[in-house]
Image 1: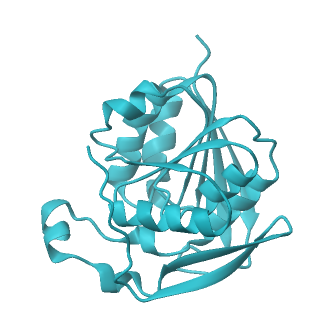
Image 2: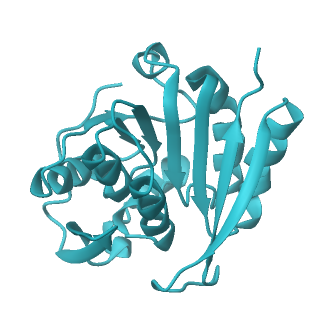
Length: 224
């Protein structure tokens, strides 16, 4: 699937200063995600521009990545949105592939990476039909995602997507604000023999209906 070169440059952008592990990052994103809703997109596959917001889960995942030694690691971000975790991983020395369903998100993530002195690769990915180019790059050392389990179909799709992308050494870390559909991913992988651990972290960022706690899910494939 070809990656569209367009970005959200027609949107009203705002820039947030995000402090991660003592480093200040400038992250631009559309002021109002709802202004980007495309009725044709929604009619086709119920697609909504969740990518355009800087979610608390992304901030918590970025902090988690900043605390790790990532130099030389191959990191895949699923649903990268505006790119904060991907940028933090790249600044930590990882080789990062940031992916999203929206070409506009990838353009925004690349622009944010450039403005913060980070180097990332991007790829347009539909979880239900992943491009062969993505699977060919597996296994990754670390696969991450922030608030990607907000719909039932997402967990089901990721449960099918992750096994071909993971090896026996791969760690998967998903930051999620305890959304009920997270079990669609974790229960399916646990039934397939994956290990699963959780850690809850209280945050002080904007609080939505999910509350002030982010749950970090850590998953590993069974060792063959």
